[in-house]
Length: 101
Image (tube, rainbow, N blue to C red; front, top):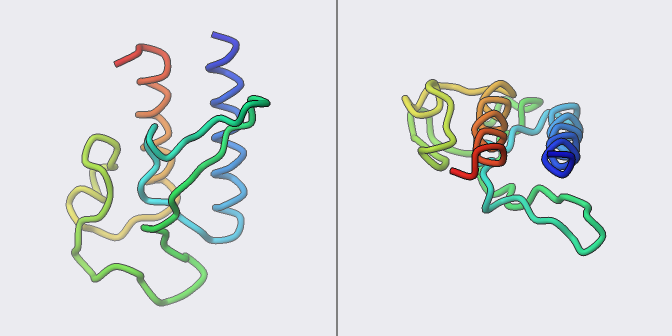
């Protein structure tokens, strides 16, 4: 369980850093999390990122982007999302980390 807590803290810190810069990941999932040989967790694949500091939206309005199993309800409905969508996905990742499924 100590490893799960360590990884959870690292994910939270990574999301906090991205959100502080106005970046929403929008596709946080286990496949986009990698652990280096020294135990550092990296958040990868910011390909669906949305910049909250800009009026530009990288994807078309109403377009559903992301991985369904980790999407917040509003994201799955193609609605506008903010940092809370990443927090939802983080919760899904934590569930998988703690239950193994």
